[in-house]
Image (cartoon, rainbow, N blue to C red; front, side, top):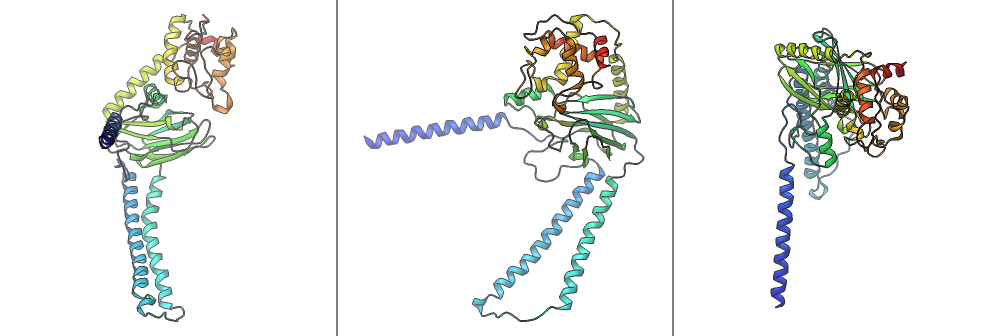
Length: 394
């Protein structure tokens, strides 16, 4: 009987283990991802496939130096271990007693010199090419914010276009829920940077708050964005498609939610995008003297909030950790709407709450403040007009 009982227990434990393993495999399958074209690959060990000459040159340099260093490693340690084994004391070898050799001294000075030169020349050529931002067809300023990118087309086709690029709200919600979705998880944005193929694009980087870094591995580009400084880099994408990167400088608690998405289009499609974008921007350039109804402002404010505020304050306005809740917030509920406008316009806590003055239009700020004052449990009935924002900005 004892044997039977032990057998039953073993069988029960085995079944439990199988069930647990099955559950683990099912969970793993649920979160399975594939290679993302233009982005990271599953179990990727090497550099990504480059779509610019600079990226290809970097990959060649990486492989060349890796094989060269591997050959040196094998040669040096091969000679060392051969000497240790072949001339060990147990075999009766006796150490020679000699002083320096002029030939050896010359050899181990000249040979490394030529090796270093062989590595330095192509590396210097690549670095010089990476810094040559002259004769660009398109110049774009990329401004880092906590935690999004602002793009302004300064020169070339598309001049005058400007917008913010923020992590897609659904991606942030999936992260908060602990349920990754899609191969582009935490890389999907609402407004990707759009450029034409086979055109030299100069990227000018700066930042509004802390140090960020603009990096797209497929382009072979990484440039720091430093507050108060202007840096630049460039790329010429030779293939259309979507290419992804991330802020490569630890810039705060939302660092992981600051992706970069560059969409490379054919020249024809790019020209069409420029035309459509300029029409949309013209339509969005609202007259600050226009008086809006409260439902109109709330409807527009909901979109502005989802694109710019929900990532930190959450879609339900409850906030998280040090991020203050907007639902039932005394500042939001206060009858003096100037208090909330001051926070939105000028920010707080050294940029932890960003200043939206100049980033959003007067109408957009009026809409989002009206939305927060009349959403969730905040039923103030208050309406903020663009003219109120203009007055508070003075």
